[in-house]
Image 1 (cartoon, rainbow, N blue to C red):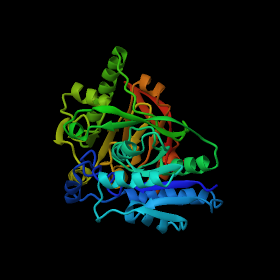
Image 2 (image 1 turned 45 degrees about the vertical axis):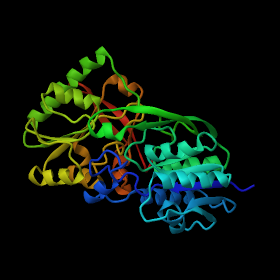
Image 3 (image 1 turned 135 degrees about the vertical axis):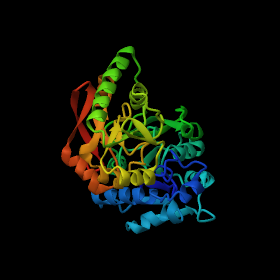
Image 4 (image 1 turned 120 degrees about the horizontal axis):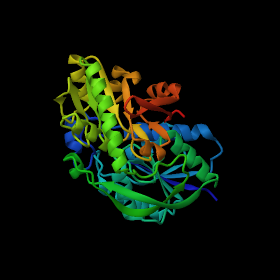
Length: 380
């Protein structure tokens, strides 16, 4: 009996990332005005190509999808023939309603799995219709991705799809999480459990939800991290420092009396703020004035991502200009206990391969104290 795969792309997913909007919900027009470009189609096609490269023995596989860039265009572009369109959006611009309407049609066609390309907002919209009736597998393309349905990369997602079709993986409960974007843009982190869906269980390829680590001893370690970064700032007085998001970076900035955007990226020169909550374009403009720069990052707890989740302002153009060697990663030892791998998903294959070639990154875990941590990218 043929396996039926529902295939759905949210064409606007991730557009708010590089322009610093921290999401796309309700701000698509603003993102476009700021110069945002669609990225979901590229991610979807990349996953499909990688899936096709794994095996050519799926002639009986049926793809049930949507018209235009909501799925059919991507399938057609990579040469997948056995596809059926069950829903088409009414106009060029798509919305959450299109996602929900498409899911209703997918349910009617008794599919075995929904493969979708988007972020947490897309996962939430899909779950709102299908609940736990059909397992979900997400291609990571959004700004926010905390739900347990996403593969860690396009390559991992393709591998999971292949193994699911061959009945090598099981289905189990996964959390659908959602971050309030309005609060996020104001610097507040409020993630809530939206529901429990069915997903593919594969701990190597599926990201787990963000974990937070808070303890008194961690604060003592963060004091050491602040001292270490202070030394870096004083040794490189003519360098621009990009302070990225996260609680650890927030603590360091506060200790150094630097105003910091908890959920954004701030530019610091000679210990003074020269750019607040900057986007990709603003970073590149600052680098014309300050050509030497370093990036200060901390991994997302448990997931391990340092690039590609929540900091899309650090685009391939920005990273290439700054240089991998000028990335400083900081973390407390307790966080690294639950984060054994650092993950990178820049969206650029060539750049990902540069990270892959390094294999490891040095993570600062105290004052002049570092630990070697293994790297994993979309080219693993």
